[in-house]
Amino acid sequence: MSKGKILVVDDEPDISNLIKFTLERRGYKIILAKNGQDAMNIAKKEQPKLILLDVIMPVINGYEVCRLLKECAETKDIPVIMLSGKTQKTEIEHGLKVGANNYICKPFSPKEFANTIEEIFSKN
Image 1: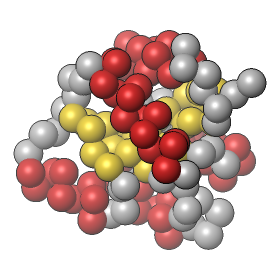
Image 2: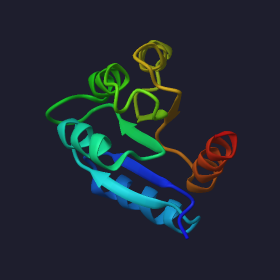
Image 3: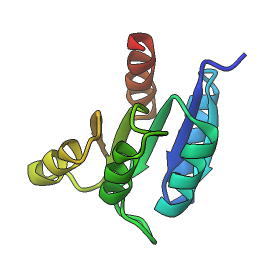
Image 4: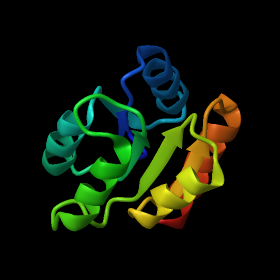
């Protein structure tokens, strides 16, 4: 039985697959998207419990996707965690300003990452 559905949006297959493997082992159902436009469509259709969103992507960047998700009635209440190699304070602040609930910097430890996701789900 799934603990919940998570949409992972990242254009790097290695990262997406690592996240998918890590979280599926913890009992989550993972849906993958490779760009921001796909993420918007999938989020509206699938209504995941959480969205993990890369910042640098083709079509629409993660900041813009997050802003659009938070403006859309169908997706505004879905928590968003930004995932990025952009570790500057201004980048993190920008992610939070556009509506992200959290910001995780790459590279990250898969175990610590999964524990963070578990904490988020335990609060909801």
